[in-house]
Image (cartoon, rainbow, N blue to C red; front, side, top):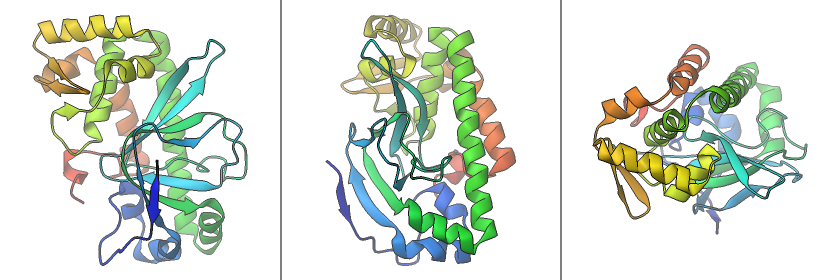
Length: 253
């Protein structure tokens, strides 16, 4: 269930790095139209074929996930989007049917903005258009990298990559609220494959499992086991939208 309401801003902006990147003038164009929603894990934002009329900005540790339905009934997750970005109407500029299913991966605060309000604001500001155009480029880079990753990297490498990707977007240092089943969906494999990899990582002292979460014991060992896809995406973000991708330095911006 998504609980919605107005947001008392005060002098601070929502905890979304993309929104915080905007100049004061550009943010003022959309601020009156932003609304807060509290979403729970598993909440549906879009189904394939839905009209995309709202942009959702994950805030803080919240995460959204792009999922592609397949003919066997399984959904395969392609990318995660956290406080570095937004989902809905970014590439298509809205009013076109959604191709993927977009769900809430980790619950928490989101900001929502009607696409028509964002498009109206873009017409008033070239710099606002530029920021969202650059973010659309970064979003596509994530998708391209995910496609390549799924084709060439092992389940072990991709498991470590997804755990790190989720960890970087949460406020807690070493605990990631991922279940075996959620991780299997991210990898596009059966739960038994994921469980075997997790058991190997546990035996090597890399991590432990708790009910509904993963505790990282050795961050460096996890990074050694991961492919470099996260790094490629982060490097592109830094070149195109410096300071937006979640890092320790941007956690308290």
